[in-house]
Length: 106
Image (spheres, rainbow, N blue to C red):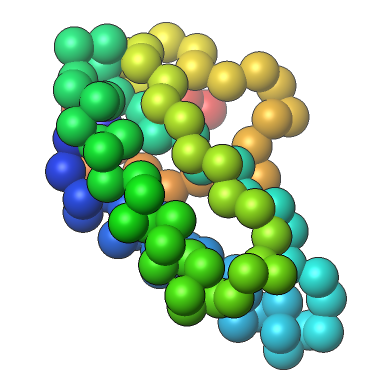
């Protein structure tokens, strides 16, 4: 899960950097970002959300005010259940989830 610390937003920052650089190389428009942080319902999402103002400030300072918007939200649910609708996500990052699965879906 995303936990409640700022390291989660460090991963998001790196993903934004990679996508921004790829868009510059390909001379295409940087997309809007929708970031969905998933963890169990008991996670302290409020502590994580307190880091968002500094994250948004970093985005504006690093990427400029014309950079596409970045929307961050929490999705409290076990990853053993379906978390998102079909065809909803374009990119998924999971750091440690695989080692908890009893079997891999085919």
